[in-house]
Amino acid sequence: MDKIVDIEVESDAIVGREGGFLAIRRLRLRNRRADGSLSALYTCDFLARPYGLDAVVVALYHRGADGVRVLLREALRPPLRFGRPAEDTPVPDARKYLLFTELVAGIIEREDVGIEGVKHRAAEEAREEAGYRIDPESVILLGNVFPSPGAMAEKFWLTAAEVADPAAQEAMEGDGSPMEEGGTIRWVRIEEAIAACVRGEIEDAKTELALRRLAERLGSI
Image (cartoon, rainbow, N blue to C red; front, side, top):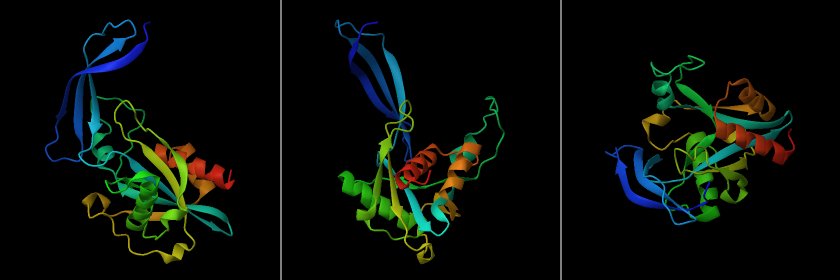
């Protein structure tokens, strides 16, 4: 098979924006091969967000007498409530979703520039979603991943930050969105949280990956 050296764009359009949280970016493309020939024209659709591309994931943790505990958050996720299962799509389970367990996370905003911006956004999300104030300079970087490169260009920046005193929690302000109503938090031993991922009780990929990287970093597993 000939080597692909580039992709040529025949058309580029945003469809389904209409003021929503996400839109579809539709590209009509041809692959350009090393010998100069072009592939057949094909369509590539992926999710686009009108504001913000990447997101930060924050594993908040506390070291106590019984080991390391991490903060888990229960939050509304309407796509899981209404998107699973579709009547004409067989799935292995018929679980009904309302609240979903994950780590603190949020979209990196325009003013969050570079690595310092990632740390700043991690601190802001910790305050908004969990009610804890942390120093951005104390944020640990745990790497970054693309969660679904076939469907979106978003990159997750995995981070962690230590909470000295879990009792020093302030009000969880949220970002004002109804999607953040009813959110709750709980502290769980990191080993128990990872085991819950293995059992399928926690089903969020970014949460499991960040927890495992944090545990390795701290020598907890």
